[in-house]
Image (cartoon, rainbow, N blue to C red; front, side, top):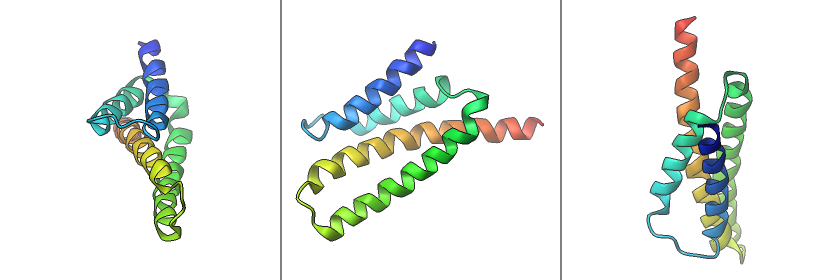
Length: 109
């Protein structure tokens, strides 16, 4: 099962970057599913805190980066917006799973 999580993570990152060059239909659903798989299979109990901090940082930086690109009107905005939006979808889905697992674990203690 660890290989499934590992390959899901790699696929999510690669697909997020490829979307800057290719239009892939229904990619948001694929990214969501891959993120859920990563959240369920890849993150161990020891990694939860660091992972959630990284997820929060990525979401804040990603969303603010999208806003900054819109305000600045940067020439690469279309490409970077697509990549960031898909990566945010991927990371947010895995973060939701990991945070719910962490909350349930805290409830058990």
